[in-house]
Length: 324
Image 1: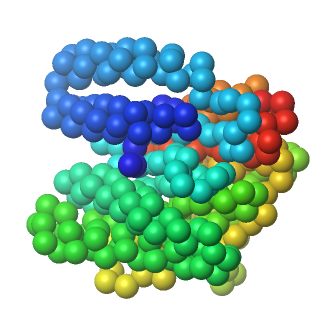
Image 2: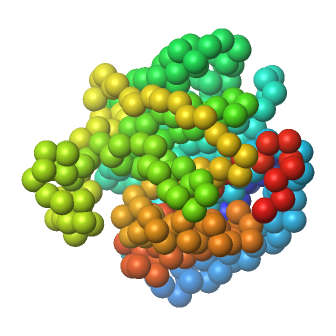
């Protein structure tokens, strides 16, 4: 199940995901309904924050545990400008095959809150497809990458057809960046301009390529990379899930090492926080939960113009790594 929320633990993904899905859905709906009545909105926001913090207190105490291959925390924030959070994410340990995990981040787009529908639908459809075909994870690299490709195209078909059949969803779509972990290998699926980073020994490497107009201009030599952040068309993406009948996602693999950190984030983070600052915040932080909080807060300090979502994952093979 896809979910939005402050944290994620592997011990009880279903219970946590159900709580965060319904909590965030109610919070976003109420914020939208009462955004013209600030006093009511402030009171309700305070109530939801209190409920979230009470539940999060229990999660923070047990979200990482020795002996697990992967540790992860996810957080999404509406930001300081948008009235609705259209991001969705998922962190889940898959049943049936040892040491397999699924992580997804999606950034929706479309009017009348259709972006929220697109992102949550994409996350749920991909997770469902992977689970229904989980036996393919026992096969080789090519078959696993085909599984990811098929899961994304399956979700694309569902979102695209919904956008046609429902007038209030016309034109909706979403970015999609996912990591499927099997043992010490991660398999990546990617569409749009959300990003996946690998942080290893104080160095950061981008594992995905933005499907955006600015990325194409950089590749063509029309603009320099440092000009991208302030380009007037920096938010124009050239490929998204659900906007066209057919879709060809980027699919790849990467070998992981003990202590490696993976960051999956939306452009609400990557457009505002420099990569060197990302490394500094993640590497020099005592735990993943704090790292995730610091990343989101840094993006808000830079303006918080968009929804902000970050999923921070660390490989701790055999539970012997004690750095976090």
